[in-house]
Length: 351
Image (cartoon, rainbow, N blue to C red; front, side, top):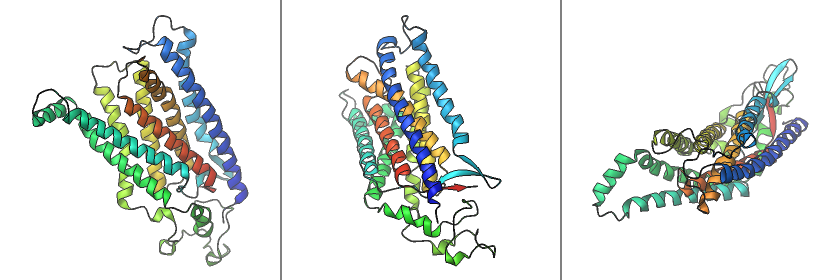
């Protein structure tokens, strides 16, 4: 059975960290909007001459914050107990909260809208060329956008399926499943075992559970192979946007705006890798929470200023506005995942 005292202790720590990161994210977003509005050239995206040392220090503060989160994750999720080193882990990847349903549905909708806008811009462009020639020119001049069109649709399918899974799932299953069946040689040694596993004297207490006897109500056994494959689509989507940024010769790749965009896509790709790992049962939370926090911060300092300022025709952006809207919705989705995991999951220790 899950050690409730230990689980609550880990939950409390994660809650405090999440609140702190949330405050930092809001503060960084506000400061970045101010810096971008008054101290960055709206066309070439480099700092203007009136940018002083205090303004330039914002980038260093952001970098130090990111490094601090990455380094601290090596320690805050580790525990020493009975002469062994353990990592904090979640008993399951929580599904079924209303925030997950809403944010994943919104992400799927905006991704679908992004694909529709891209389709319309290509096939309904009034340039007098035949449709076939227009499509051929588009593939030659924008190969990454052409591939991204299909990845965007697949990403939308993944988020809609995630919303459907969350909508149909009883969240109470997460609270009792592992209490009955989670017995692992790498798990917290303070966890008790059920009657079928013995009292530990015969050496059977640390055996892994027989997969044939696993509870059919466990949501992680119901993920289809197709759904697992779809979970890689946001990763590919993020990576392809990174490649698109590097191969776009019309924009300066070393401008502050572009660097933040690259880091945003990189952080999102790292988060979705950690989410895919959670789906297949890799429940150690250090990577999951670390990449989630970094993703939210980079979206705050990149996508939010770009979308808000471009909406008022103040900033000329590198990408379409709907792309920044998608990134912001991804951040909301990730925040919903953080909330759900801390609020409803049970936590254990694994070696």
